[in-house]
Image 1 (cartoon, rainbow, N blue to C red):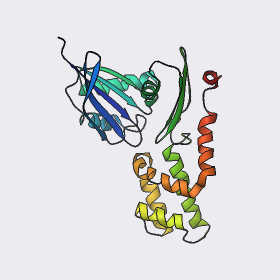
Image 2 (tube, helix red, strand yellow):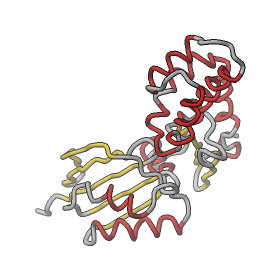
Image 3 (cartoon, rainbow, N blue to C red):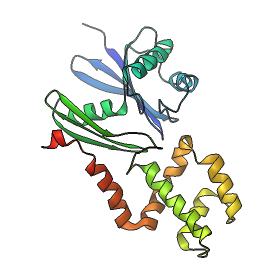
Length: 237
C-alpha cells in the first residue's frame, strides 16, 4: 500500500494568507490542519517577508501549491518557486496567482467566468483552450469593486466632509470610532498618510460596511458594473 501524501495549499492576497494541509490516500482527501497568516501579495511583499510567512507553515509535506495575488508572469512564478524551495526543499512545488487557484476551485477543468473580488478584483474566463483575463491591475491602477477600492472611496468621502465643513455627520463619527481617531482634520490626515497603505488592507477593509452606508446602492452598483463591463467578451459570446 502506498503511503499517504501530504499536500499543502496556500493562497495569499492583500488581506490574509489562507492555507490548508491535507492528506491524500488513493482518491480521498482528509484535512489535517488549516489556518490564516498575514497578507502575502507577491508584488508588495519583499522575499524575506514571504519567506517568513512560509516558515510558519507545516514543514513536512510532499507537495506544495502556492497561489499569490500579483504572481502573474512566468518570471514571478519562478521567483516564488525559488523562495518556496528554500522552505520545502524536498517537496514538489507549483506556483501561480490567485486567478489560477480561483479558476481551479470554481470551475475545475470546466468552462465559465470567475469573478475574484476580495481586497482587489479580477475577472477570468475560460472556453475550451482559450483563457481571457480582465482587471487585476492592482490597488493603484484598478481593482474596481474590490474591498480596498470601496473602502478608500468611503474614507475619501469622509475627508471631503471635513474639507467642505459640513459638520459632524453620522458616518464620519462612526468611521472615526472604528479607526480610533480623534475628530481633528490634522490627526485624520496624518494617520491616513502613515497607516492606510495596502499592507494595512485588513484595517481598511473594515471600512467596507461604512462604504455601503455612505455611498449607498448606486455607487456600489457602479463598482459592480465596472467589474461586469470587464468580463471577457470572447468567452461570453
